[in-house]
Length: 251
Image 1 (cartoon, rainbow, N blue to C red):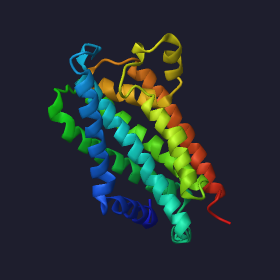
Image 2 (spheres, rainbow, N blue to C red):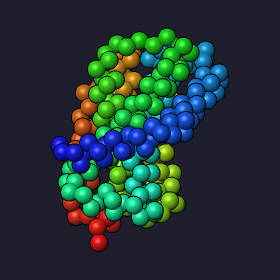
Image 3 (cartoon, one colour):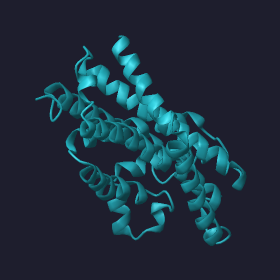
């Protein structure tokens, strides 16, 4: 990778880090509020896989924060550049479409991991957590962040204005993340909705990530890895094809 990639990656990381109170602090506070509300209502009444509910909830909130912020980083950066017209300064230099893609996606992964680490640190004292198989935690955090970072690139390329991007987030990203088992085990759902949940790729990201903490999950971590890896491969190829064609970026 050349200087173009490293410069664009640095610019994208610096962009969210300079307003860390909004891009990191606010999501951590939101996750804390979810934890306080749900744990207060359900702690002591619910156990999942033999794990107290508060402990079960924390990994789900961490991974949800990783995913949502990875999407927000790449999508918001691209739409802002397009609306203000400064996207031309990114397109003019001799940066390959692969470097362009990697810079935006890896910066999104960095933001997702930073926010996820902040949520984990802020919630760690609420309940005891095990780290039964920590490699699964890292694998699913990295792959999940890359998938949502790629979706953010797609959304940023497709959208021409902020309300289109908001529609993409509100009608696709939010339902996928909230209906993925963050707040519940899918085994608690009726059979029909269990089957529907298994068609949601975010379920496998959350479930595999949670498996790394407790060593138990609703689905095999290897199945989750296969689904998440396939989604990442498909999205990577699709996004690179959009960038190669210059869809909505180059006249």
